[in-house]
Image (tube, rainbow over the protein chains, first blue to last red):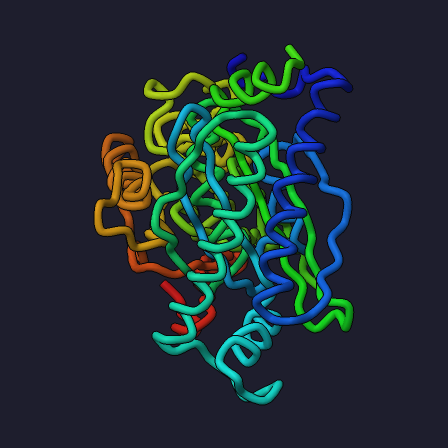
Length: 205
Length: 161
C-alpha cells in the first residue's frame, strides 16, 4: 500500500476505529486519574483527507494550539500529536500545578514540562492498549512541545506523509472534561507503510 | 473590499491587483511569492518539500520547490507579468519542534528554504525579501496592489518583507 489509503475497505476502517477506541479509552482513563475529573471521549474519527485539509479537523490552520509531538518507533512507525486549544492547555496546567483556574496565562519551563509529561502518559496508555489489541510493540520518543498555529504544528507530520502521498490517514479522538474546560485532540498518524502491519495484526487484510 | 484568495498547503494561486493572496499557518513549509510591480500580477505558492525527485508521490507539483516555482512562473507570465520585472519573496521554513537528534525530516524547513533560493536563482528571479528559519509558525500574504508581503506570527508580531 503506498499512497492509497484512499482505497481502504469499510472493514479496515472499522478496525482502525476500534484501535482508536481502545487506545484513546485507555488514555482518557489515565488523564481522568491525573486530574480527578471525568473525561468524555467521542467515537474516534478515522479520516482519509487531503494533506491540506487536516488542519480543518482542529478548527483551521491559524487556530492557536499547544501541541505535544511524539515519534513512535517499532514495527508500525507512526506519529502521535496531542493538540489542545491554548485556553485548554492553560487550564490543564492550572490543574496540574495546583493553581486557580485562570492563573496560567503563558507557559513557563515547568508548565511545558508538565504538559509534555501528560503527552508522555497519554501516549504510553494509548500504545499499551494498542499492544494488547494488536501485539505490536511500539515505543514513543521523548515528547516535544510547541505553542503555535495548528497548521504550523501539523505540518511536521504532514510533510513526512507528503513524501509518500497526498492524503493522510488520521485516527483522531476528541477528549473533553465534563465541564468542557479542557478539550483536546489526540492524533495517531501511522506512516503509510505501517497500515498494512496494523491491519494484518488485527486480522483485517 | 478587495478579494482575499486563500492558498492551501501544497497549492498555488495567481492573480492581479487588488486581490490579496494569503496562506495560513506555515511551519516548515515556505510561502514563495512572485510579483511584477508594473502589471501588478503576482502569485503565492505554499510548498511542503524541496525536491520532487526524492518523493514517491509527485503528481501534485505545487508540493515541491523544484516543480511548483516554474509552474507558478508560467501562470504569472500567462497573466501578463514580464519575467525581467519579476521579484520574489520567501518566508517560512521553521523547525517547529526542537529535538536533540533532529533527523533530516525535522530539518526540512531549512532544506525547503535552500531549495526555494536555488530554484529562484536558477530562473534568474531576484529574492528581495526573506524571513525564514526560527521555530514558530507564520501566516503570509501578498497584496497585489502594492507587492507588500506580510508575515504574521503569534509571538514575534507582524512584519513586512
